[in-house]
Image 1 (cartoon, one colour):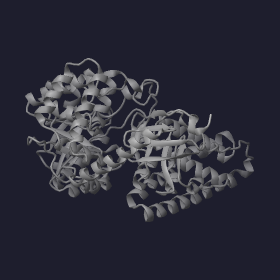
Image 2 (cartoon, helix red, strand yellow):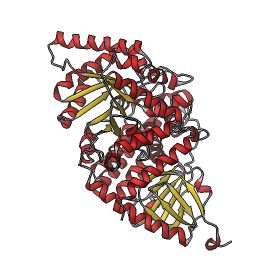
Image 3 (cartoon, one colour):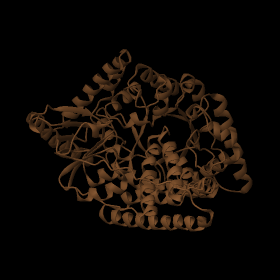
Image 4 (tube, one colour):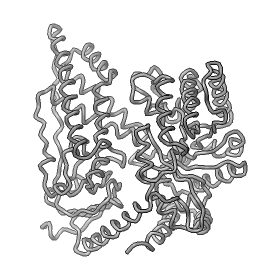
Length: 588
């Protein structure tokens, strides 16, 4: 059967970079690098280690050159992606473990590094944090470059030579993506990946439409097949009909018109049509993110994930180091609120060299977050003192993660009071009225929300974990991820319960999980009387736009209706219809 006569077939993936593209497939399935394994004589040990050190230096030089090119072509923010690659090359735990493997196995250094790097990659892939899980791609990318240098293998830039094709690949590395140019590459489709992968971030910067997460898609197409990809909704059509092409041509026009309207209004307040104002905040990992989220129109920092200060180092940062980082964020935010989440380390989310890094059968139900901090009070109080000291420089609030009940909240607050006493003794200033909240992400906390609300200043619902624990679903497990349903009645009823109990005690509720960034679910959250939303920075304009197109009473009516429905798919369908109606009124 000729290509022209093949039937149209649609696939659903994850929308990664907006836009519509139509073109032929360039199938990019790179061969695995063959790493030889052989024994090294003791007399050659020093020479072998020297080769490894030289390869590290050469790889660092190459990564810095790529970083400079990306900085010139795309900007500093995109170039900073390669900081993660440089950190891999400076990771003493990875390097030392390679040397230990070499000393114990007496095998060649390339094989030892390959073995250790794969160990790290598999560990990161198992982490139930989308951002950290994607760092496996960074390690894979830089380790491949290092191995090529060790083995003196060629490093061809084949993607840089692709012209007017849609690249289909198992995965796209940041290094590959750095060579892509808009106009030469029409779009990207990958078997794996997420919205947070570095390659996807670069694709968005280059404005190349991309869809990821279509399992085994490389097995479904051949070179030369025609594809249409919709990077807005994550749809890929193989051999699209003329009717489909026409439809998506209109989609592209409408989306561009909508994006223009959204950006034009991103600095306006997040106020509904009937005057109900919502605090629309953004999530950050460090001080470098602050200017960017305010450029998108965020009202403040709703979630400062402090664990990234720890994960980017082979040792825990000091109180002073943390204080300086928190101070920078507070000063950059000015009067706008900054909510700092205390450490959410634990399970398999540790710096590799950490003495606290122990193997657990089920790390996500284990020694993590507030549990870890309450057992390691010196570590925890360093952070508490740093946050307290920074509080005089801005509008800082603080919240504890993974609180399961009143006992943990009480013990954490007792340590906070000890940190205050330490600073009083040292004569250092801090805000005595620092607001302290609790994250609600464990079902036991949600069910005792009334008790917790009487003992803290605000709630932040972490829906990523809450949904996972409510439904007993690992959302990154391909076999059961379809069961991870944010519109499950249990999820909506739990959020409604938490908000009701919090408001009865006079405290506000924020939602900071992924669903707060989902324009389809935002009206439901408004209807459930959530006070604040904290979203990814780039999601602020769209969420704000949705808020400005709805009436709060309509949202409350919608929420009441949805709470009586038992089928999650029916709930989603009704929410999607509500969302579509509110958008369509401003489309051309």
